[in-house]
Length: 492
Image 1 (cartoon, rainbow, N blue to C red):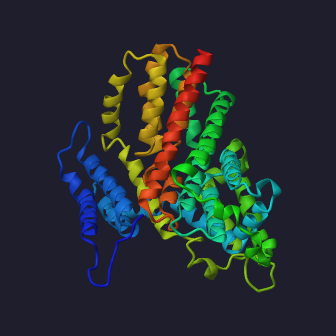
Image 2: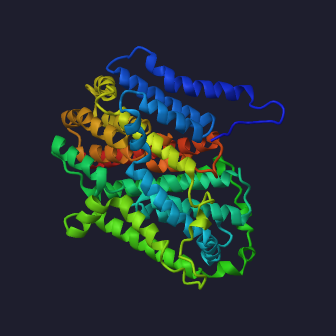
Image 3: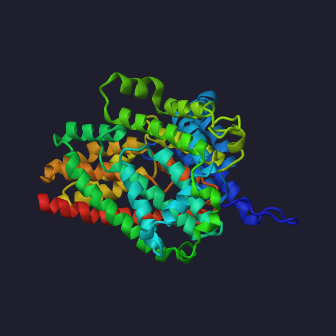
C-alpha cells in the first residue's frame, strides 16, 4: 500500500487529494445512486463501502480508510453502528489473528528466523542453488496447508521470509520480498484447497453431493489438485523470478557466518514457544479432522479456534522462559512495538474486509440473484468442456470479489443443472468449483490470508503486491483449466 507523499513545503501531492476524495465518495456517495437489477439500496451502500475500501487500500494506506469504513458500514442500514463495530473488531477471525500474532511474531523475535536461515542455507543440497531452495520452501509448505491452518502458518512464514531477506541484505523495496510473500500466500491457499475434508469446504462438497448425487472423491480430487499445485508452484518460482527480476545472487553469495554465534542454536525460550505453538496446531488439526468425539466438540464448538490460540498465548506469557531471566517465555514488552509481532494494518484490514465481503452476499443486498441472472443464460446449451472451463473462470473471479463460502454455495445451484444435463462427470466439475472457490488472493476482502498479505508493512507498494497476486491468479487459471480438462477427458 502506498502512503501519502509529503514534502516540507508542499504537503500532499495533488493526486493524493484525488485518491482521498474518490475513496470517501465511493464509501459515502455510491449508495445514493439508483439501485440496478436486483440490488437493493442496502446492497448499493455496501457495494460502495467495499469499493471505497479497496480503492483506499490500493492508493492511500490502511488505517484511515479502515476507520471511515467502520462509520460507513454502521450507516449503511445493514446493521446499526454498535453492531457494525462489534461485528468488525469483535469478529472471531480478528481475535484469532491477534493472538496468533503474539506467538508467531515472538518465535521470530526470539531468534527462530535467523536460526532457520542459517540451518537451511547451510544444507549442502541448497548451497549455490537459491532458486531450488525457494522452490523447496514453497513446495514443502504447500503440503502443510492441507492440515495446518493457513493464518498461523502464513504469519510464521512471512516473518521467516522477512528474516531471510533481512539477513541476506535485500533492500526494503526489493522484489525478492514481494515474490517470496506472494509465493507463500499462493502455496498455503493451494494446500488448504486440495482436500475438502473440513470446515466450509466440506460443506460445499456435501451440498454438491445433495444437488448432483455425485460425491466428491477425495482421493481423486487430491490427485488433480496435487498435480495442479506442483505445476503452479514450479511455474511461479521459475517464471516469477524472471518476470519480477528477482536477484538471487545476493542469497547465493550470502555467508551464514554473518548471522553471528547466537544463530547457531535456538534459545530455550524459543524452543518452549515452538513446542506450545506446535501442540496448539496439532490440537486444531485434530479438531478439524476427527469431528465426532468430545475433545473435538469442545475445541470446535465451545473453546473455538480463536479461544485455542488465546490459551496458547496466555500460557506462553506465564510459562517461565527457561533462560534464568525471571521472565515468561513471551515478554509482552518485547513484542508490542514490533511489526513482526502485531501489525495493526493487517488486523484492521481483516476486521473491515471480511465482514464487508460476507455482507455483500447476504439476501438483503440482492447481489446473488443479480449474479445468478447473469451467469445462467451463459451456461444454457453449452458442452461439458465449456461448462467446466467457465465454472473455473467464474468461480475464481467471484471468490476474489466477496465471500468464498457464499459465492461457492451460490454457484452450485447455478452450475449443477447444466453439469447434469451435459452428461459430464459431476465429480470433476464439483472438484473444480471447490478448488477455485478457495483461491481468494487478489483483493484484501477475498480471504483472511489475502487480507494479511496485503496488510503487511514489509510490502508497501500496492502496485507490486497487485502484480504478484495477479500473476498467481493467472497461473492458477491456466493450469487449473488444462489439468481439470485433461482429467475430464480421461474419465469421460
